[in-house]
Length: 399
Image (cartoon, rainbow, N blue to C red):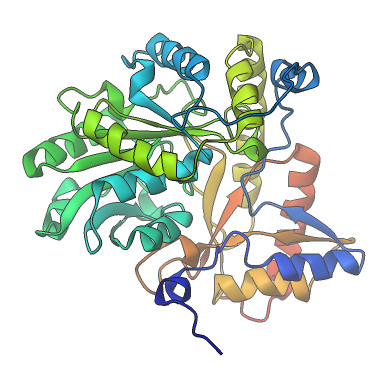
């Protein structure tokens, strides 16, 4: 039998999705599975986006420009300018989700064996993107004790070697919900300029900043025109995960030109998805006001109730719609599998993402899970009950 490639063997399984077989088996037995493992909101997609699909007049769904439809890129550039990000359509590459934007950036800016420094816990699929590009993630660890604030920049500096080529920040953060402060981002900016690095910034949760906190983009920071590479997506902002439309944004012309070559190799981003994405830019402001209120309500309820469970610690997220939760368990991977395969309460069980998958450092996150508060309060109420009861009887409970 031919061998599987080394790259394929090294490719990590998604910690967010690897428990799907256990969830499917639970469902086959009639158990209601509450999905808090994945950032799939139950918020309705904007009507203007759905109408764009319903009223499509195209006779042919054809290839677009490899950089994306110009009309979409121009309209997206206008949106960015409205929030103080001064770019034009030639500085935007439309991608197949934010995932492709990250992959194209790594492939365009980094050589195999190069390193990027990322605060951990970080979005688990960064490991996969790094494996595809043949690069190494060097983690700098943040902790639940201070709400996953940015570690001191001196900790970053200690990790810089001749192979270090960039820093990756997700702001607001997935999986922690932490919103980096202006001071923290400017400290990273200074580090990037000092060592001539790229500043990769994943900003797909830009609209989800709570408690009157604003969002500072990497594109707002002075002096980073050749260093800043921003990633964006319609998935969360408009609750359109399935259309797979993202964007790579940078004023560095060489990065755009190089990324476009990878874009040409995959021909074009999804045609129907671009129609939806472009129409979504006309979403009325009241949509976001209602979504904001809904997530604040969900966050406040979930965090309050989780912290009432003995042994559970849950910081208050300032952004996105995730929280990393510390549980009194021996092993979060075992617990997340056990609760699906061996436990149910009042006909329900719970699917969460084990914390280990969001760290590079071995043994980190073994008593943490990521919970996405993307479901309505009835489901969250049921989820808290299930978790409380499960922790009471879990064989690997720790005091």
